[in-house]
Length: 311
Image (tube, rainbow, N blue to C red; front, top):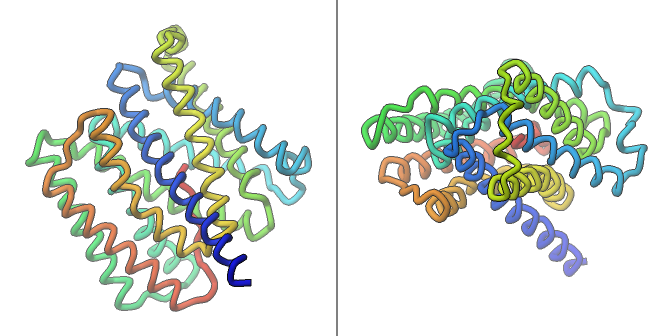
């Protein structure tokens, strides 16, 4: 029994490790494509088209057509989740045009704080001293990170504010995902529809802004990059729900707080982006505050209150 439990834990941590690496690469590769003067709409379209194709194949393999046409799924709710996912991803891409992957990975952790506030407002969940302590540490961390961009290099507050907006959108979406999961809709089904609807909305904006004439994506170096990005985006979903299968959600949420560290390493390797002192301190305060909130909530209630997905 103990041996079996160890195997389950190892499987869960392997999924978390790959999730963290994939998520970090996604942010950095998005930034790399944007530095090549691609529009955010066409980057999002190709990315989520590839991810949707991968997730469709994965869902079909795992659950057959029953997983694709899940009877418990409510189409209107899935569309709403996809729309909010699109707003999240568009905000992140917009932020990356003005800020850095490291800032993105730190500030997007604000979804922990915003979700706690939303759960207090809408789900009537109680807040305790350690919740306020955690939120205070996180806000101080955000201040350090945004000040790092203002005084360390150039003023990129507009980009950083888009990351915080994305975190709010992600928090709202978490409530809807929780509702579907409570109706026993498989995570792979939610992920597949989410990615598909994202691709559709990005396609609409590609058409509106007439970006369809840009054929540079079919050059070998760009095509391989966007193919890798789409695959990693799809794997993000798969690793996340794989981790949830083997580990409790509070442990998964705590573990993915270390994504900024992976992002800093990968961003340095690919973009030669150096992390400055204020960003490092901001990262420490943000991760510490979020960890306190998650740990406190896991102790207060055996019911795991929120489910988070990094779209």
